Image (tube, rainbow, N blue to C red; front, side, top):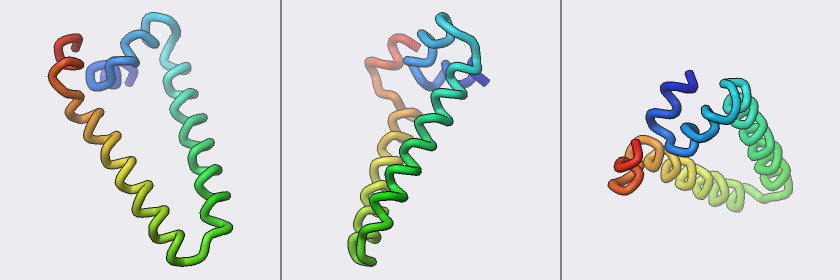
Length: 80
């Protein structure tokens, strides 16, 4: 898995040199859990309209990150 991830995500190449696959997986899981918990807490105190706006904002952010992973851009591709 880490070889495939390193092909599309430049910083993972450096992590691969430092530690094994578990570091990347554990970091990803920990980051996802922290973000999910934070967003659950934020959403729990919002009214319906605020929740809709917040979720739309999250969707947009995730979409932009995904596009950056799928198409990292010219300068990042120079290093891949």
